[in-house]
Image (tube, rainbow, N blue to C red; front, top):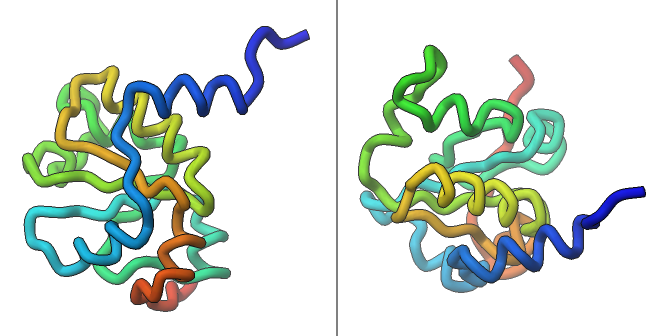
Length: 131
């Protein structure tokens, strides 16, 4: 038997992280000091597309890409730019944002209603071709 379910984990994350609505996120498109970080599975990107210019950071590698001491570190996460994480509906990104917040990243938030909300509010999308 589990002690906490996803609802409790997401609620706990939302208490300590910044969550922005998709409508606000759409207004950040093109801001040179903002990086959209898509943590969805690559198959979701192939199927649904992505936010133009977003960085794909698979959920399973995210902490390794953020940590400068990791052999997998990606410089974009040390850029000092505002990181706006998202998944499809905001659940995975809430948990991921909380983890990165616990790692010490401060200029970070997530799209509370995810990529689906982004599309519903007229946010631009682009296709992702299989490699």
